[in-house]
Image 1 (cartoon, rainbow, N blue to C red):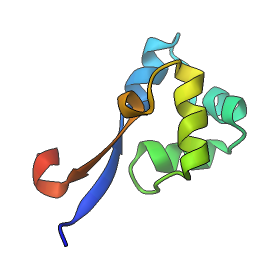
Image 2: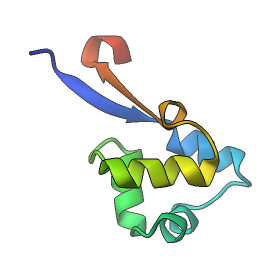
Image 3: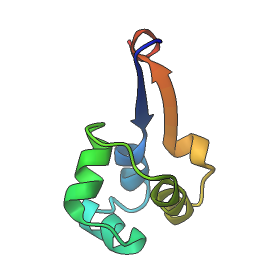
Length: 75
């Protein structure tokens, strides 16, 4: 099986939404700042529910926040 990784655009989306902080996003989705940081750093993949809540905050489809790629595709 190929080595796959969940990638995200959270940092970019936070910037585009009035430079929203990780803390503000965490409060909006019911998570901790540390969880948002881990997701944004690709150290942790969010639950499906949390992924949808993040997309709802930014008012974009889930695919604009997260992608599932192989290590080769990420380069």
